[in-house]
Amino acid sequence: VLDLCTGNGSLAVLAAMAWPDVQVDAADLSTDALAVARINLDRHGLQDRITLIESDGLAACTGPYDLILCNPPYVNADSMAELPAEYRAEPEIALAGGADGMDFVRALLRDAPARMSDDAVLVLEIGHERAHFEAAFPHLNPVWLDTSAGGDQVLLLTREALAL
Image 1: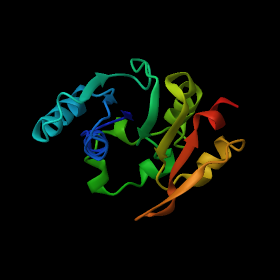
Image 2: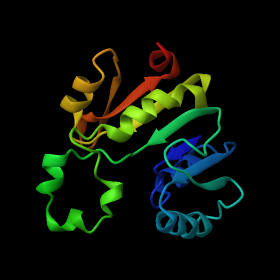
Image 3: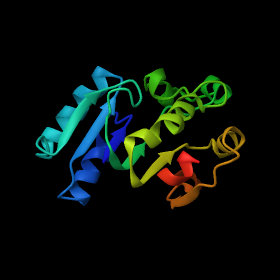
């Protein structure tokens, strides 16, 4: 499993706890985020099962992975300009996804198939950016997953769908 854009490592910790026989890589560009993730995986005693990787996107993540979880920067430029103060406390690099919010996602979807096993899936959070996602990737037909925030914020794509 790869938790890309791991931030504080919560998805990596949850994945390791959900699947006790799985090794998890947790990658982030931010060394500060990785320091917080280290605290969280140590707190849960998962230092032998989760490997922290400093990586710009998938650059240092070799795989192959059976599952990639990713909560990337996806907020579009207009929304970034209107974020309330509590969101501005987060580092901009963790939120800002370019004009349409899809800058990181474009690179991820381009590069992910080479890091995925044949039957792998990618689970991707895009927040309130479904319209931008669909405009940027009209050829994809993701499975939209129901979450407590609704059915249009997290999607699933297979390696097969990405490789077409």
